[in-house]
Image 1 (cartoon, rainbow, N blue to C red):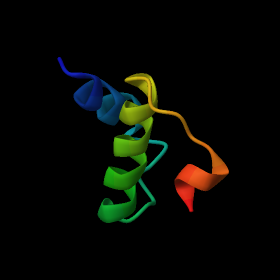
Image 2: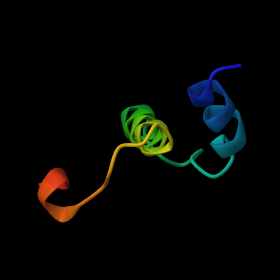
Image 3: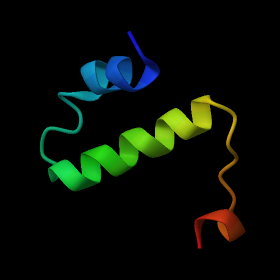
Length: 45
């Protein structure tokens, strides 16, 4: 099972009220962080 699939399964209830586009964006960001990406203010903006 890929990291994205695992996160989606684990976060299904927590993200249930979010729009599908926002769910995908949050999952993508989380997977990127797990893969070693950094989250800085300059990187976000």
